[in-house]
Image 1: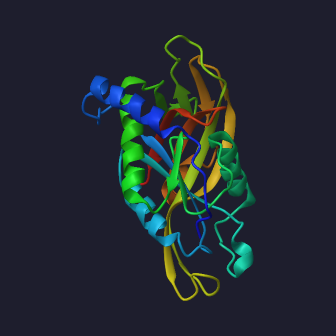
Image 2: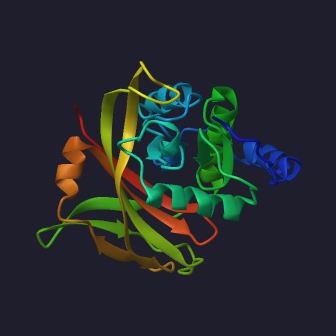
Length: 252
């Protein structure tokens, strides 16, 4: 169900920068490197989405990726109402379209670390973008996030930026359901049994962050969210780029 899209990012400029980073960074995969945030905008009403959903399930197994499945609602009208879709998820995707200079939104769309979008079923391209992000993080790691307990509450403690300053950011709490199987009875996927992974069930704004060390209380149901699948704390700049990220996943 992919709509025609227009890539407006400078591929040449990005490739040149990454070539430099590859020389500086050396092998990717430092143990303390934060995970890359990968968001998939998908819909059970889209016949092009199942391969991308399967890819997200594979990415969810990686320790170096925070895999988030955002189900959008704009394909519900064609016959099947996605039980995990929301207008808020569609709004988040539209915000990315504005930030990335895209003329339309589409499914399956994958946004890598808030910087680049790719067709979610194009595994080789998406994996290359993830490696691009890992190389960037090797030289620009950003502040660390520690998730733990403080005064009887679950909190996220964000370290200070190197110079104590940063572009205005929002601190987000994202929680997901590990997996769900749905028998689709109508629409483009009628008669199929779909498996969705890391289905985002909550996205809450915990407050602003401007570069100073700070702690943010997590929602009271954070541990329940962890039991269902997992949660992440994300620091995202106004431009959409992720500055910091950490996750906790269930061991089921």
